[in-house]
Amino acid sequence: MSKLRVLVVDDSAFMRRIIRQMLETDPEIEVIGSGRDGAEGVELAASLQPDVITMDVEMPRMNGLEATGVIMEKFPTPILMVSSLTTEGAHATFEALDKGAADYISKNLVTSALDMLKIQDELIAKIKALGRKANRLHGLRAYRRPEPPLSTPSGHVTQKIGFVAIGASTGGPRAIQEVLSHLPGDIGTPFLVAVHMPKAFTGAFAERLNSLCKIPVKEAEDGEKVTPGRVFLTPGGTQTRIRRRGVTDFQVEISNDPFNSLYKPSVDIAMTSVAESFSGRAMGVILTGMGHDGLEGMRAIKETGGKTIAQNEESCTVYGMPKAVVEAGLADKVAPLDKIAAEIVNMI
Image (cartoon, rainbow, N blue to C red):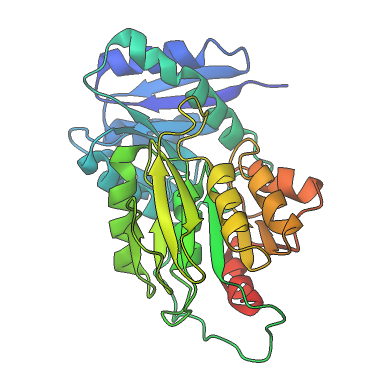
């Protein structure tokens, strides 16, 4: 099997060297070039035709956002943004995803070189997932502004859904934005969205979604009451659960339990709490992502009589989390990303 050919674009010689060293620890990856700014990155992308590009955000001459826009327009290539763990970095990252970047990896600019090596496994995994995708150009179009929202149908309900839980990882921000922006504002059902994302990013992501969607979106807060027709986004670095506090009262619970969880937030933990609180009335939706987080949460929803939807392989950035659900026989519906909002509305 030929090696994955990666182009690294970053204005920091230190970061270019570190990223190259990290990637080349894997025998399946070859760094074929490096650019010092966005303009050089565009030139190298055209001449070298890499399989994947890592792209810094803040650079002189042409920044990462501008370079991403040019590359995706002229010669679409999977781009992994390398973003700082700041609110400003989060906003810039989401703009890059709008322009067609496939996903991002976060870095801490004030950390030590030793600490930066901790992102190595995630970096390699994402590069390989993006580069090995069978149809690597699918889904790389720049984000489309939402079309008019769907209308809530009548006559399709067989069981009243009381709560919808959505989970995603790699490629998740764009997928979640696509789904939520096509839901009607009067849908009347609360949503809990769990996506693998650092704390510095989730607040900015909630604000962004709220500006694009008809249904209100906010970052979840500990102790707040669950209200109909609102989306609650799980904060990064913690676990979010939905708890029953009365016959019709439900509350958000945020904690660090379990402390040693691999994912914070965990889709399994969030979805399982929804299954328990809304037994028989929960819906689970699993979107693009690596691994199998969400499998047990979707199983809990299914086993308690709820409904489940999985994104199909062709429209996924990474067909890992949905694949685990589909192969376990837990998906009532398997649908392309652009049809999932309609499926949610129909099943509610």
